Amino acid sequence: MRKKIALSWSGGKDACLALHYLTQSNEYEIDHLHTVIGEDTNRVGMHGIKKELIEAQASSLNLPLKISYLPSSKSNKSYEQVMREYADYCKSKNIGNIAFGDIFLEDLKKYREEKMAEVDIKCLFPLWKKDTKNVINEFLDLGFQTKICAGDASKLNKEIIGKTITQDTLIQLPKDVDPCGENGEFHTFVYDGPLFKNAVKINLKSIQSHFYEYQIEENEGIKKVKSEFYFAEFE
Image (cartoon, rainbow, N blue to C red; front, side, top):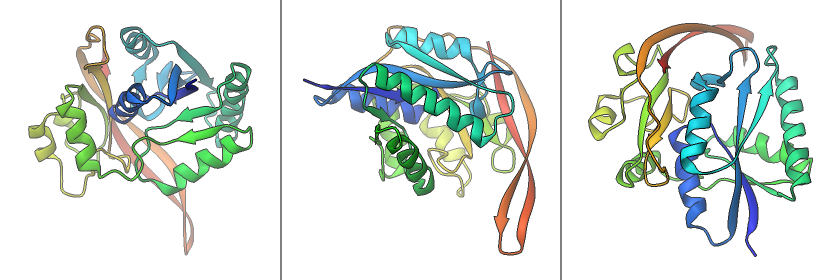
């Protein structure tokens, strides 16, 4: 009997390729997709994607979607509470495994594993330690189509936001930008591919710019950082 598994779902290419791998596995049965939506924005975090588009993806993929709502404070404490409640939901459905699309961020992987271990849930990382250039090439070769929905303004030109990723698009990326945007340089929204019953219809309405302030620890102490991100407004 195959093990029931949930997939953390942002709507992007890495989660989608992880889904592809899971569908090829004889070990796991995908129970549902899980997405965290901002309570105040009705969107997916740094992707900026509307809830309705995530729902359209799940419908086309013919998979149930479980949505958790993150309070407007968006504090780490609030996020962990949301994830604990979601873990309890999984346990109630006898789901002991959750898959993530992370590729090489060690700290993030460790954080997920530690938090899920507290509630006796195992984490699976189908793309872990794969070469990111190979990951995006495999994704495109399989026939998936994805658009850049958000990007770091210090790394990317505004004109690339909202574009479908092709080999030509990858060539245009600056050399210090990871091909999968694994360091947070950009995020994507998958709208078609072999797992989809039909393409999710999206049109680029505009490109928005937002600033974020956060703190990082350095040898000299705490440093405040302000960064700008571009977001594609799809409808």
